[in-house]
Length: 249
Image (cartoon, rainbow, N blue to C red; front, side, top):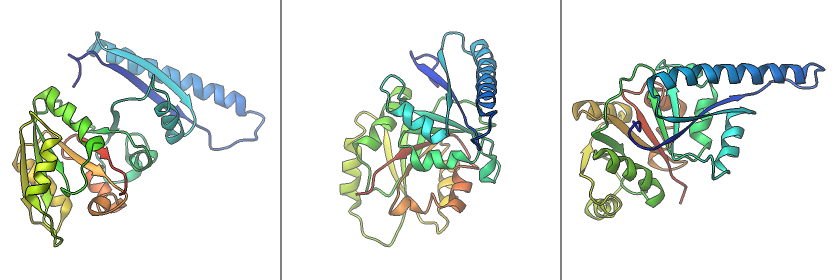
C-alpha cells in the first residue's frame, strides 16, 4: 500500500514462555530469542527482494503480544500509525495468523489496524465501506481513515444498518462530512437483520476494496465484537479490513 510513500515499517515478533522457575529458563529464553530473530531475518530477506526500497526494522521482543505492543505504543519512536495483522481466513479464532492473542489485540490495543486475509491480492483501495452507527464518529476515529482516503483518493461509503432508535440523519451526515473535507463520500442505509450479511452484501455489490469498522465497548458495534460475530467479520473477511477504536462516552 505504501511502497511509493516514505514509510518506516517495524516487523514485530513477540515470544513468551508459559512456565517459570525451571533452572533451564534462561537457556530456553535465549533459544526463543535466537529463533525469533532467525525467523524475522528470513521474513526480512523475502520482503527486501519484493520491496528493496522500503525501510524495515526488526523488533524481537520478549513478553506477551499485548504487553509488547503496549510497551511499543508508549514509545513515540516506535508507536505506529497503523498496526497490521494477518489472518488465515479459517473460521476458528485460534487459527488467526497471530494465534489466539489476535482477538485480544483487537480488544485491548487502541491503535488503528489493518487486517489482511491470507489470500488477499493487493489492489489500490479506491472504495472503502465504513460500517457505522452515524452517532459516535469523532476526530480521533476519523483522522486515520481520512488520511488513508486522501492518500489513495478513495471514496468512503458510509453504511448504516437501520435500527428502531431515532437519529437525525441530516445532522449526523453533516457532522461526519466535516471530518472528511475533499473526500468523496456517500451515505447508505440497509435493512438486514443479519448485520454481517448486510455489510458483506453491500461491500460486494458496491465493489469495496476495504471495509472499515469501529470497535467500541458499547452500543451498536458491541454486537460485532462478540465472539460469534468476530469470527465472521474478522476471521473470514471478504477483503482487507480497517479497524478503528473509539472510547465509551
